[in-house]
Length: 340
Image (cartoon, rainbow, N blue to C red; front, side):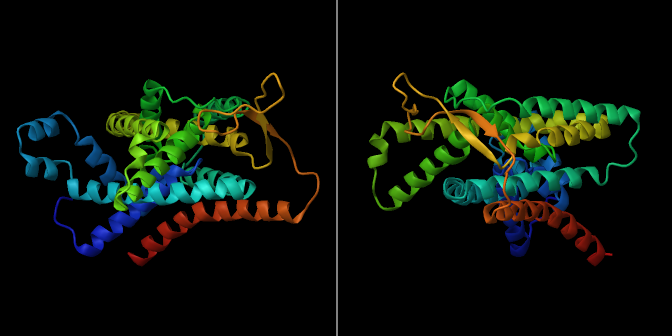
């Protein structure tokens, strides 16, 4: 596990990190699924578990090389590099697509969730009464959440830190989408779009020797939010890897049954056909937040009444979303066949 990797291996690790980062950014899709299918999930969890007291002792005592080897630093470093690159690129792309092609984006998300349900359930094994009960509990929890409207955006730093902790759950537990949870908490756009874009814009400005962003209060606030969110993500990544590994080791099938039910029950959250509900002031004008965006209080979901070309395209993107996730399964089978 700890030998020096070839250049091609390092490139593949960065590409795998890109895949994980992209999956974690998409609501309903788990980066852990990418790790599981691509064959490095166990090494990923094992490496994260090595970030413990012994690792911190090595770091504090200045034994950096020993610390690097102990936590499998080359492996984690290449993966994290890929994730960072992915977050910048996917953030800009999603920002544009959601504004201009919202129906099709949510249709693709909807399809990806359906595909994730199949992927997680296909190797579950035999279902007995106990696991069916766990499944139904997950479905009920998911349905209940589907009827909840996404919470309002909250930039309180303590809450942002908490969002960071739970947002990385999708990397350590296949099937659980951290970005999906951020949607429910109301901070998806703030944390995975606005703040990431703010850092990207700042870095671009620095390369042009432009530091005007430093005097922009709104820009600096977004960077502060991103820093706290990143710190929470780091804490969550280490702590949850230990906790979830313990749960999966002892209650693996029960945990997966709940997850399958939860995802299935919460499909309504990303239902493509919905209209936004806005907050209005006393004069009938739509209220805006500190960033100038219209304040959304919820969604009104509906079923399309006519089979228009737009509806056809939305259905097509649902199918594409399903195929994107199923392609991971096909890739896994192809690798197993090729390797004998």
